[in-house]
Image (cartoon, rainbow, N blue to C red; front, side, top):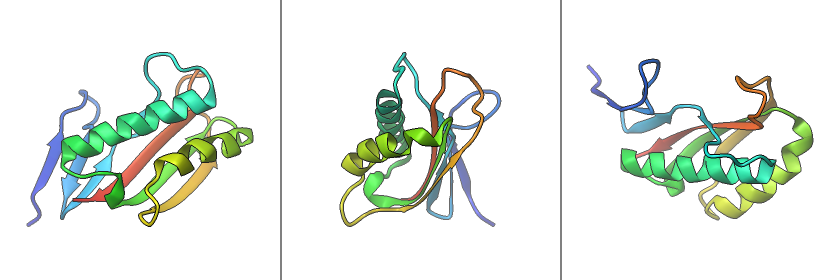
Length: 116
């Protein structure tokens, strides 16, 4: 039997779930007002750093990052922020797709999996 631990979130979801030494995060969207894609990307990655730390890990242990963009025209701007953030030699697998997000002001959503 696997022990599952959960980081507090909302009534709908946990912020992260940890099972078998793997941390699975919620989808992270920008908070606090960044309106451009670079600002929203930095905001999401800062939140991801915080969430990974709460779970007892860090970006150097990332396994997978999934990115949803409102508009694929933002792909290069996201990559510029992401490439500066990801630790050299510790790049996770990654996918990036275009999707309709829950709120029209949201330009990006990020979800990740990391090892403890």
